[in-house]
Length: 435
Image (cartoon, rainbow, N blue to C red; front, side, top):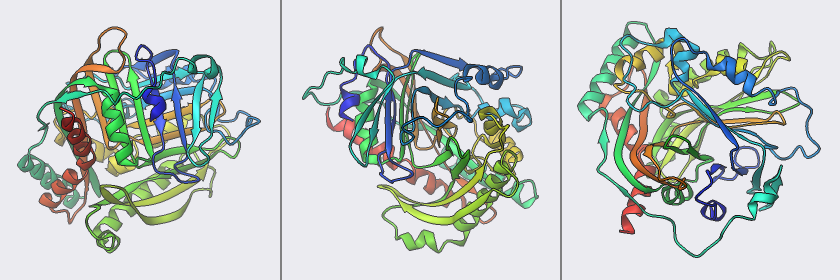
């Protein structure tokens, strides 16, 4: 976080940060300065994957492993894939009329970052990738505290009674045999004026996010993600792909055993594991898809989560675009079966999700891919003063929701969505304390 605080304000910052250390799943942080950014809209006749494959031609899943294979990033692309990209990849997933697009987020935005600073959280070692040594000299460390920001009152896209009706309607669809599960979310919003890096400095350390991300994007947009969930990890050479879906949540103040013993939450996760097995089976070698971890409980500062792990080995001809088409959006944020669940989401959620519930991460030129599910994610949009990438005047949006199954209780599901806003409230309380 000290390096992020020292980043020049006239240069955009793209950062991926592991705040919950683990030798395999939470070790590396990447700070990069983009040289160009590509973005694609959500027009029905637009297929951003065709252009994306061309733009990512240097990122090949079959490239040789570099001489220092331990590093995950040797230059490449960093950015986000909007949840709404799913409608572009699969037009049948839309409902007529669709959810309102009142923020105008592109379907995806990726920044080309040929150089970066890479930090190993286990050893404490820093590595300079590409020409990072040249521009890292512009970092200016000081004793000044993080920047300040004013945040207005929070408002929600679905009030408690409206959310309860959406849950009840979802249960009706389940009873009718349309779906087994759907993830119904709501958006919490407020006005925002101030330092987005100040918000970053207060939110990220407290969250202990294993897949934290911070992206200063063109057009007055900024994304701050505090995600605990891995969407896709691809290892170069072996072509091994891993996903770690999350389903089942309790506040961290509740006993872990309460989640361990919940048959409902266990069933939710097993449904998504089956969906992800099927998704990976579309692009993986026959017989290679495995479930090494059917269910485990992980505890974070504000919540307990149920987590599984699914792996496979990509077939030789499979490209990144093929992999994304087969798996996106992640099953934990849609439901099952995926296309029908997305139709229900589009019908019952009043506004589009944008980056929330999409994916955030990197595609390295060495062939490594690391993408998180963009939950616990703040999307900021508005305007910046020229030359001040860390200062924004506009709107703060934060998505939260729950997986709905046949025996869901509408009040309980709304309360789960409230539990998932705890990390946002912690950050905003710290911001308010400085005024």
